[in-house]
Image (cartoon, rainbow, N blue to C red; front, side, top):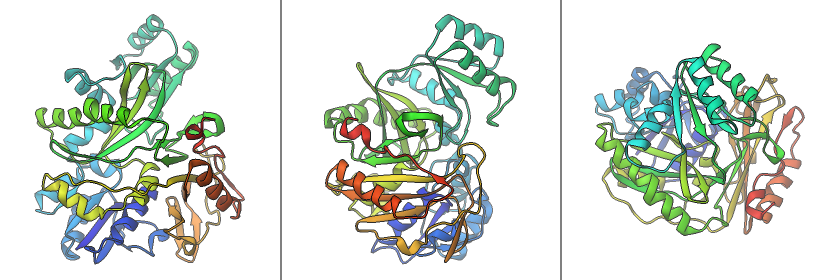
Length: 419
């Protein structure tokens, strides 16, 4: 097969790499990709949300399967265009991608189908939202309704903090998401990520992972797109994961079918493990990033084959490497605020899939002279027989690099070792 991966970040690098090692795959194309991916894929200079040009390229290069990485492409209707053109695509149509594109839509679906989630209310009027806020008190979670690159969520500890977040969303549209806000009950517990390959009501759950959203150690600082992740999460019992699959992942896939917007692609559930059981915080319509970068290397099965199996409504048994994999993001100083570009980036010659690897995200330049072009620049992932050993390996690798101008968290995986 020839395979096309749409996107340009670390998630897409991991996808392109994993698909490239499939015995069934002859050639991987990536559009637009980045120069750090050149060892696993051929780049096509096409914007990830230009569905017509992407479909034309898929025909030109005899692409048998297209996998869509980023949410922006999904909400631009790229999957719809591919389906219209008779091209095999793994990613939801625009209507189904609303499960991520509108937090209000996702919450309403959960409410209608009895899927465990936090109490919430949706507002477009500032005064009404503020009145609700005063009534409910803090802590409370304030969420921009639309896509905000992981930055549109505020866990407000004070009314002043919550009101400032309301002003950002409803009055200033700081995140460019439109003037709609979801005010949500603050849930106590531990957060994990659970994803599944989905086609209609066929769900193939993947292993769990835990993301680290805050910019700095000890979960301090602003929310980001993710500063690191690890998998598996050994202190979370398999019974809890099964409960989440049965109570949340499977019912949401079935609900989308009933709603007339069947979902095909990767359905991601962000979960809070509360005293009363798992509850859904949010849904994404694609692989998590950085979660994909610590899950895909642990998958011992052929990803291309698995996708085709799910598209044929089959759910094969999955095999996972038993070792822990920890991924740490190297971000430009200042991220998620203003940051410098053009930083020197380690070469992709340092990619060694067996024990440690690098996935590139915000990079430009030439293959042998990579320079940073984004906030989250690359992720280093290392295996270990335990979380502690994986931490030791990944941070040893980080310290061996020249990371002047970068910052990274030093505590990725600490939740798994009880720290």
